[in-house]
Image 1 (spheres, rainbow, N blue to C red):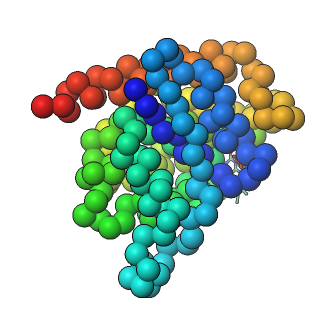
Image 2 (cartoon, rainbow, N blue to C red; image 1 turned 90 degrees about the horizontal axis):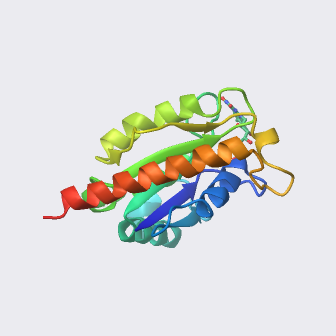
Length: 189
Ligand SMILES: Cc1cc2nc3c(=O)[nH]c(=O)nc-3n(C[C@H](O)[C@H](O)[C@H](O)COP(=O)(O)O)c2cc1C
């Protein structure tokens, strides 16, 4: 069972990348989580796509999504919505549109996020829902996980030191992995 996780922040000290790193170490037995980033993905430009096709960084991430059983999006929140850089990456990953079913169709997807604010990333997680629906994914709604006050939940090295949150994250991942396993059973003829 392989899950691919993508952090939606480019920042070296990103709480969301730190959350993804923590998740890697809290996966249930029999499942792995590979941490990926959106680094190197250019701004979407239809002229660039027409002239040069899908950029290598986008194609590499697309291939990893296709090879994975489930997808974990680790999203920051900007202005109560999806950060442009993360949405841009997903927009590129949805090109060409004819490949959306292969990349995203029926794919089990979960959303988590971290913010120094008091509400975690609840509004950006909500803002992802129409995108996940449009791409035909199979989102998991069995639990929600938002890390609020992330500046306290992580230490200066980006280690998740909030034990209660570690337990919540571990349970969240176990629930998602069960969902991914169930999705595989029902989508395999
Ligand atoms: C342009 C911008 C808008 C932001 N808007 C929000 C917001 O609406 N809600 C929130 O909780 N945090 C907001 N923040 C703070 C981010 O949650 C914070 O910068 C966080 O560290 C970003 O995630 P990262 O640590 O993974 O890079 C915003 C930050 C930026 C740069």
